[in-house]
Image (cartoon, rainbow, N blue to C red; front, side):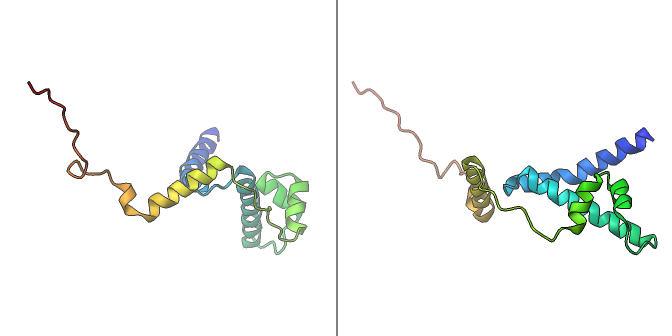
Length: 128
């Protein structure tokens, strides 16, 4: 059983790594990702229970399936859609995001300058 859990976690890590890279590049913070993951867990648990013939799964079923506590499940199921307010990015995050956008939009920034295009340093020779 432990081998199966390790395998599943490794598979999830392999799938999530590019998503995390994208989130970091776009300046998405941990609270936003955590809320998204909670929402996805609950939505998929509801879909799974419905596919098993349960038209409206109760809070306990969703809690056991997702591993979230009942209070968190209740808040998500009964709450209206109210996304987290957009938080201001740090100066470093803004700079990094702008730099990545600049690299992806302008191809000239993605290649190294050629040696012919660079000026050669002039040597100073002593004349007798």
